[in-house]
Image (cartoon, rainbow, N blue to C red):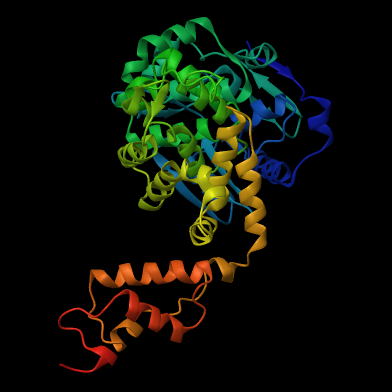
Length: 460
């Protein structure tokens, strides 16, 4: 039975530009004789009194009819009845009402048939995402009890949970994401079905798992999401290295909050809209602790940063992150202990640290690491103060000499060049060398010519 109701007063009072543009698309479809509504997550947010970030539209119009009504469109899934309508404010996904056949591969339906609004809603994933909104009449259409589940803060599948998760197993992770981000409970039958079907998550493509994982980790409630993945049984098949953090005790004088897994969850909960790379850095920063744990006079994790960096690289490649993302995440894991030694660093080494790419992410990881353990931010404050003392030129000065200069001095190109230039940069950062003449003299004294190299750049 359809239930109709209006949006909360706060959502009726103010309409964003995106909402107004979407309403115009609905109006044009209606004027052409078609049904059309806002659909999915945007309606959920509007019923909650929250401004939607984007708006999808469901309609009785076929894809070719949608394309004919708007000047700029492109198809992204014609077989599923999906057309993108471009407007100055945003691009809007307009999908034809449909029902779907059996999902033979756990992702794609064997067949698609266009249908009416009520049938379209019932093939969707969760009740909170199953409402339609008529922006012209300001009425929400609810055939599945979405309003009641929003009121009770519940994630529940539409219809039989096993059927919904069998159709598309990535919905197992989507349920976790909605529960974590919204602070909702997962309904008992839905939860039980998730526990039974959790091992089947490996049937989903790595890319889809990665993308859904990032949506969990970069939103509010990320730590709760990770806990839910563990409790339901989704964490072990996707990230066994993170599952291994559960129960790994830490020295209470440094980590009164609990084991490595709890510490990681607390950091994720404390993060605010982290980049995908920072979120993965938080998730993986202590991944090297289980294999490096030793017991002396206390628990120790010697070189867990180096071991963890190699593990992080393997995990990110397994999840098919880009090479740049792999490098950024690996650097976060590599340097998360190095940052702690900043106050005792020599000037040159400190400047290198301050000039590090994406320093803000490294600092934020360190801040969260401290806040969720011992609570001391003295190193964080020290680094920020030192960063303010130096100009960019002081942190990354123009090199006094380069490879061509070394060749002109008579040095033969090879691996030694890197050693010479690195040592020279250190002297420059320390302030002991300030011009090319003194740099040349220092190089000649510190790195005498080898066999086959000629002083003053002459020829043999």
